[in-house]
Image (cartoon, rainbow, N blue to C red):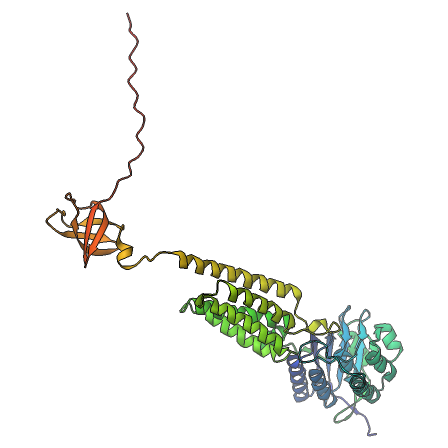
Length: 441
């Protein structure tokens, strides 16, 4: 073993692993470590609160930590936080691990998600292989970092959990700290081995710099939440359908297009069921066809049923990974929106089909207008304004003065025949005979 080299008194970089472990989180961890190595930081601390996440992303994070040239500390915090599933592996991969007093760690049993989005039904042999692979991986991390390998195996095989004080007593973590400054004081002088050799930490009085997620990373992390991705997919599709119904409205189409692009990015990071996605998109396609096909509502009802089925299957993670499931409340809300939209559109279609034609000759007969410029007599034509347009007209019988209200009774070519519009007389007030004055003497 080479001699220890004291780490220079550089700054301590503090990052935050919070939420589902996915490609966005893996990219963030890589960026923070790259930046810390460029600036020769004294150490990197990742506060962590995660229920777990995707295996590939967890492996990417672990590989980057194992290759780090600066010491990496994982701190399960704040109080009430947890390091679950993938978080257990990341904690074991760190050079030093710590927990806040009221936190827990464990439940690292691997779950295989099948093509249908749910927990894949594996044969006992395949499940044993999957579990043994996970055990071998986490035991290797434990042995490399000198921490409790027995608990690591139990966390995988039996989903065992430990609270902070017990984790410290059993050697699962190195420290229990109330906050980051407390952790840095306790870790000062600790010796760890990085990818470039042994390092003695000098963190007690080191300046601390936060390495927060960028705005783009926060956005991408938010939309990769299964529920948000589902809402974006639904809203985006609805926007395009509205644009199809009302070409040129622009706004629904723009919002729909952006939402769909974000949704497809998010779904690319999740264990999506292609059957569920296909059903959902098929249902939306039936909605889009409803105004153009005389189906008496069959397409709309079929679309609604397909939409509900696709929503339930879209990202149907196993019960052991609820953080990868679409929230039932979101499915209910979007189904209600789609149903309301369908019934509104269907009502508009049926109403339009019942309306009589209101253009051309039929639209002018019975229309009201006004005489313009000169009077119209039975032998002399004049001009009338009907429905905002000027027409040549002749009187059906009696003369019509300028400004008179008329109604169209017939049409020959481009000439109208009009007559007086009926006048609705106001109800006459009752007439009473004058009361005679009493005779006075």
